[in-house]
Amino acid sequence: MDMNELYAIGDVARRTGLSVSAVRYYADAGVVTPAASTPAGHRLYDVSAIARLELVRTLRELDAGLDEIRRVLAGEATLRELAATHLALLARQEARLRSRRAVLSAILRQDSTAEQVTLMHKLAGMPDEERDRLIDEFWTEVSTGWEPPERMVEWWRAARPELPEHPTAAQIEAWIELAELIRDTEVRQAVRRELHEACTTGAGPLMTSSPMLDNLEAATPIGEAVMDAAREGVPPDSPRGRENADRWIGWLTGIFATPDSPPIPDTPEFRIQTADHMLAGAEWDRTPPDPEGPLDRYMALVTTMNNTPPERFPFEWLAEALRASALPAR
Image (cartoon, rainbow, N blue to C red; front, top):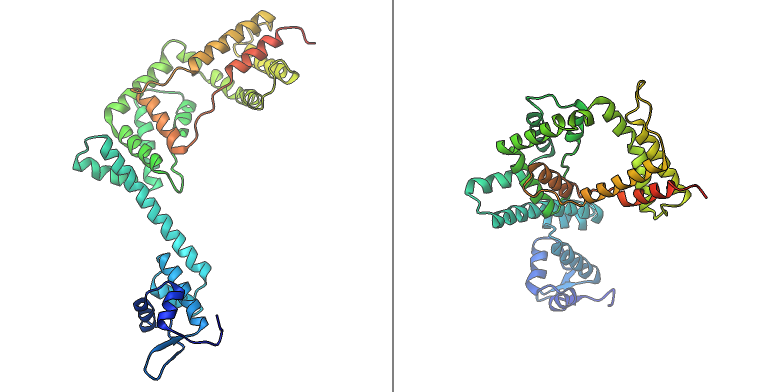
């Protein structure tokens, strides 16, 4: 293309991919004016004008407005600033589309009334502060009327949903279902009964006592070391496997120790018995959650919202390490 040549409007339209009427429109709007005109009044464009029209076409395809394009062409705004503005706009549009998709999907799954649709739309757009308040109200009511251990309440409250900055439609759907779940009075009462029974019957009082909760917290780094070793493929009968087994047994034998009751003896038989308990734990861990249980459903929805599927504890790996550690060291 000759830098000094002038091109008629039809040629400009072919080179830029714009229609002749669009080229005229941008000229009349003062966006890209022709470089000259023929004696008969026909518009002529130079190479610079053609390049500017190509940029205009690109920016229009990106939904930029004429005022924004004028500022870019006049040097009053940079392309980077324009891109940042439109990227933020697209993000908001995407968020609205995901929200609408989630509400429509929820409507299709159930025979929703007009009032329910309005509520779902409100829930989908609920700000973080209001969402946190709703979760706090749920746990406050669940723990009211009895005296659960304060630390247990803190753990329950910590398992809370946190939508990411750009949630997927599935995460928004999970939030809509979760919000409807925890607003239900019968669900709150059912969760209260379930937790109350777990904490006050059978082994509940012992397992939720302050000394036992201290012991459970002390086991956290030991359990994490076991999970790291299993995740990394460390052989259970290796020195590192024995080290993890020793730490686990050291913690376990000291749980019930008191000034009047010495720790459980660390014997090969005890280690093998503990390994059997680990295998029983693995079987229990594979038991699917109760789809009708409100507490199980709460945790499943929180997992979906937070996109943090729980990592299963390697019971089998620890069982093998315990069995190997019951044998004399090589």
